[in-house]
Image (cartoon, rainbow, N blue to C red; front, side):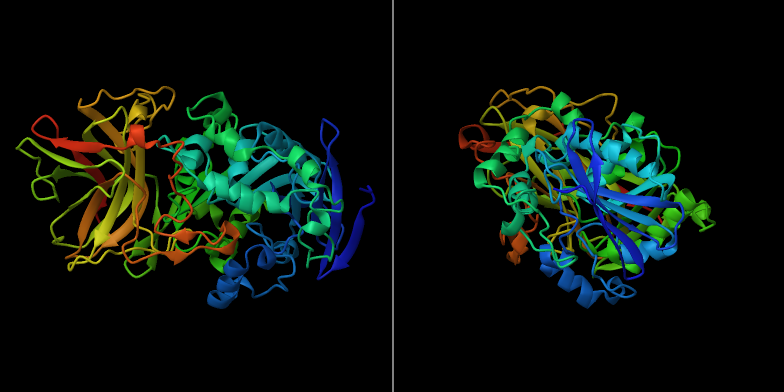
Amino acid sequence: MTNQVKSEIRDGMQIDWDVPIQMDDGIVLRADVYRPIEEGKYPAIMTYGTYAKWLHLEDAYPNQWKAMAENHPDVVAGSTNKYQTWEAVDPEKFVPDGYICVRVDSRGAGRSPGYLQPWSPRETKDYHDCIEWAATQPWCSGKVGLCGISYYAMNQWHVAGLQPPHLTAMCAWEGAADFYRDVTFHGGLYNTWVDSWYENSAKPRQHGLGSNGFKSRINGDWASGPETLSDEELASNSCDFAEEFSSHSMDGEFWRERSANWPKINVPFLSAGNWGGHGLHLRGNAEGFMRAASKEKWLEIHGLEHWTHFYKDYGVNLQKKFFGHFLKGEDTGWKDQPRVQLQVRHVGEKFVQRSESEWPLARTQWTKFFLHPEDHSLRPEPTTATDTLTYEALGNGVTFLTPPLATETEITGPSAAKLFVSSETEDADLFLVLRVFTGDMKEVTFQGALDPHSPIAHGWLRSSHRKLDPELSLPYRPYHSHDEKQPLDPGKVYDLDVEILPTCIVVPAGYRIGLSVRGNDYVYPGGAAQGPQTLGKMAFTGVGPYKHVNRRNRPVSIYGGQVTLHTGADQQAHVLVPIIPPK
């Protein structure tokens, strides 16, 4: 690949294509730089990742682009949209405001050669060096911000822990942070999304596909070229992602190298989450706000699809307000921005914006609803009778319901369950689902980050992973160490604490709250929806692509049989729910 950089003026911007950035081991990564035509020093907003900087969003994710363009006209307004890419800012909406947009293809992806190994320590080191490279360019003010969704948010958490000197601010929009707990092993259960993502989203953008890959509508060249490598060469330049991740079934150094180092993150940041992002991102956004060492940090949580709000005026204006303050020193009003901005969710996909000061909310009324097996009810009164309830360990389990609510009730925040469980075998997987039903028992679901029929919250726990970290566990957020397996003695009753991820819903009077304890993934009773083509047209059954169906990870001999829930005076099984009184 030639080192000559092509630079041209297009659509009111000076665009430098395939700018070389040499890493410490000699590999040369490639970046596109979108900057104002007028010479000067401007702050940079950077993304770094696998999604190929020359691949247009509509070519990569046609269904998502079509839905945004048709349903949210503000997404496409004010731009030619020629440079829209997946999960990155549109330079036509930032360059005119005095920013430089830098897009870097990560090692082994798009236009950058090398070994494709997403979210590896090598990638994180590369990202650090790219930030420092940008800061010293003649067009940069020395201030570098990071902004992007998902991949481009996840690696922000990682690189921030390396504390690049010129990293000034970052906006992590829907980004997981703990690669073990948030992404790969939910409560110790393997998430098969890891397999499908790499095959359907990373490898089709691998460097070296050349003419076998996508041709860019952005500039007419090959998005993963210019070389066209053989299948053997491509394989030798790519890790076995699923095997690498699935083989590390316990937390440890492998995962710490691929996760946020909260005490080391001290840069100002905006963490933006999605109420429907349980299978991948929401936990990271909440944990980041709660645990990062940064003194200047803000949390925003919204609803709807994973990609929508980032591109809408709502998200763009919030990003500009944040970066204008930290990268440009402008009076954008950010000094008055509430530390927590919530889009409070109501039935019918309605959202009401509300400002808060902390997370979880200080005025939360942490309310226990106790399990009553005799009538499958959830009630605020503890049980007095000793009872049991048995279900198939790989089956649909049992659902407990509150009586119809007497008044409208808001649930906002994380939940947790305390269960007393015995198994016929040496282990048992618990799938907990927090649900809402109308008075006539029709389930209320929502548009999740991906799945259109998402319940309000999920929690998972492999019983042999029940060990808690006493320093990090909180009453409303049990934190499992996942550093050793503790097999069950068949028939013995064990005390289990289960983390249920954050949610937000205003439940109308007359509706019911439900807790399902299952042996498999939640299934929406109304039938499956068609998933996007980019995930192999996977059927979405209520949890999107975030399923736990790998039989190698869940052999029937260990995870089959029957599971029994126990209650009694000394076994007060319950779910702890965050009830929010009005301000």
